[in-house]
Image (cartoon, rainbow, N blue to C red; front, side, top):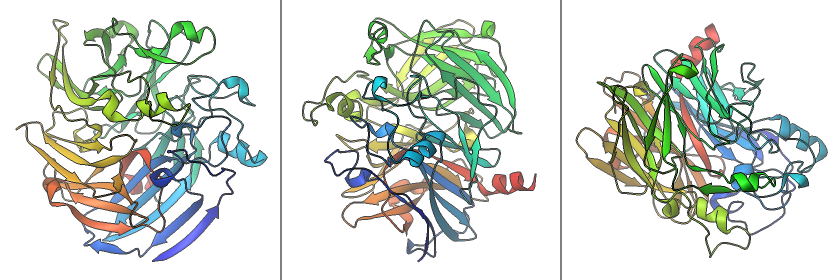
Length: 490
């Protein structure tokens, strides 16, 4: 293995027993380039592109209680070309990270503390958080785009070199949320944001040339907490779900989420370049949904698949460390019970139909992105680890036959969101690989693991041993090598 430490960051974190600062969530402070890594199995030659995953990776001792979503963004990437693989990891050099690096300590409080304890104004829907850009990463216009779930500025990086390219000029004043969506057919990026002031949401479209093409307000009854969106050929799907900040507590400056069980779920379906008056609103059963899997049009209906929470407000975890009961409850997916679910919205009658697709607890879904917004057959979900925001394995659903395949990462092995990487000559929807990072706590190492998406239950095709054990994280993306190189030529 050839390893080059590009940079080492000095951390001020103190030793603690915090569950999200230790073990599989232990942060990294070295930025590394690595080639010629140990490979167990055969690395496929028909894979071309970059797998990137964002992680929450704090540098400085927090002001008060730490929530894992407060951590600084660090992107880990593995690039594949001609049967070779290269690893890199870099902090996302946000304005907040650079400011704290200059003074050598934390300047902003996180989700669990009062903004009054912070030392500078912040960003995002709260208005006082640090935009750590640590939630999501997507590929668009040949670059990576890193985003923050409470809305931030959006940071661009080169997929191959991880060179930092700064913030996006097209981002509106209220920022962009995590989970902007790429339509690979058109090259367009669809996004939304949310805020504390009316109209409380905006929706926009960025072209394949990375220029803003469309931005409209989406009027909501008050401040909300949408986390994801979906799209079809002709429509974008936004949501107004009944888990949001308690309005009475907000008046006192307290950001406390609450489920309002008497309020239905609402969905806004808007033509891709539509105006507010073009929106059709649909109501559905009360729930909260963190992530959608895909959406498509079928006759008069818009079909939406996602992870319906049977218990959106799980309350408290009595076994958690003092002061962390609510955080630990919300990070344990066994508590809020997300299930793969389907909504059907009839664009002519205004009726909504719903059906359960699987009763297993699942989340963080992925598809072959070439089928995003299209009728599709296969979905890939992660199987959560009981008690922690970690994942024990993967599930593949055949939505045409109702079949399901499962694979487990192994004892004390925890993976992340697995992206679909098509073979370079792929003809079929599942003709490709699922790629993820897996941390092995027994061997004290992390790996990039590839599965044949057509035969998931067989186990890994290969495992690439990383130069260090990496921190667990949230979302990943696949950037096609041909798209990256085309953008560089342009």
